[in-house]
Length: 155
Image (cartoon, rainbow, N blue to C red):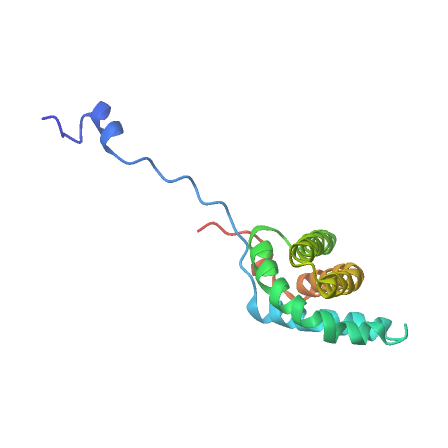
């Protein structure tokens, strides 16, 4: 009689608590995501290449970092948020600032001037092109995605 599930007082003690409701998340359109991820730096370089070809060189120096760090970060961020271009630009600034701090800390620990120089070079140009690429990514992603992916869904 002690383990009777019809006894409400004991059922509350013996039953595990209910899981909290899972918040609604956005579904990411994979084709549009990767198209915008690749096209955003190319579009920024195409529109600004007349500045001594620096944006074209930025693709070669910052492109691998953009893909390695930006892809998982954008995937995570877009699952939780709508993907506003201005918010993505601020996210890029924050990530580059964290990278700058990590690079400077690594340079201080190792005592290497090369790490300082590389960190300042990548983060200096990253503070210019990172937010521009993130803004272009956000504009392209929101322009190309279908309406189904524009609303958060409960699972």
